[in-house]
Structure formats: C-alpha cells, structure tokens
Length: 96
Image (cartoon, rainbow, N blue to C red):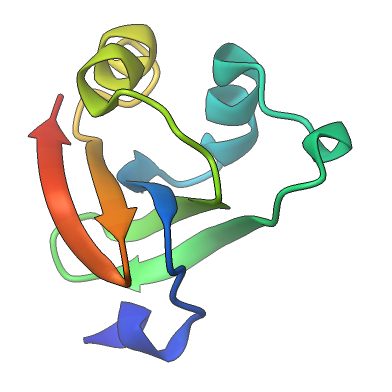
C-alpha cells in the first residue's frame, strides 16, 4: 500500500480519502493551526487506486471525535474517512 511509506502517528486522528487539493480546506474548517504545537502531517496528491490522487491529514496528539469531524467536513470531503488512532492502531473509523 502506497500510504504505508509515510509517517505513522502513535496517538491522534487521521483524515483519509480527501479529494486532491482539499487538505488545507479541511484544516481550516476544523480550526487546526500550527500554533497548537502538535505535529500536523499533510500529504497531498498521494496516489490512490480508488481516487486517482488524494490528500491525507494526520494529527498527532490531537483528540477529536471522529463522528463530529465527519459532520463538519462532509461537504468538502464527501468520501473522507476519519480514524481515531491509539498506540499506532485504528480504534475507531467513521466514513462520511
């Protein structure tokens, strides 16, 4: 899988299956800024078998409710998947 070569986060939230070029719109909608001091990983134009190209956001040490995130971003990213990550594993997955 292409995505596996990118950094994994220990704890936090990932947003996957974002239409190419929309990652920064998602961050703005969620109110995520670099001033938080937590690592923010933004991958843009990543190859995707299903979408052609996609964006991915990884937020380390951020606690967000995946269902609430989906509700906020579904107009911008109707195919998004939000994953809650704990100890490098997905413990909750919510699709738009």
